[in-house]
Length: 64
Image (cartoon, rainbow, N blue to C red; front, side):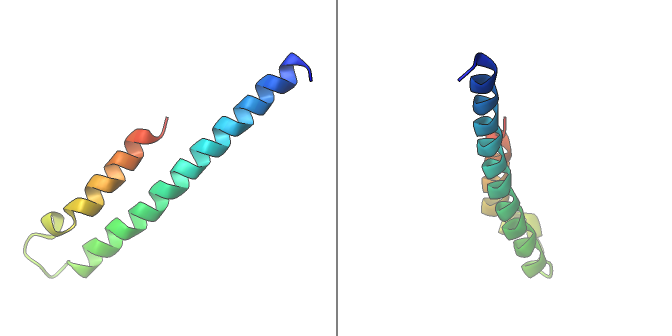
């Protein structure tokens, strides 16, 4: 395998890992917004969805 193919293969693996992380964040985002909708009638919506927001933020921070 040539050097170029090895580098290209490495880039594809990295992209695949990044894509998986983005998809994980997408799922967490859906959970967060569903929580916001479910708690929209409550007085402090953001506090009720704090755990969902925290998990989503951690996921964003892991995307490189």
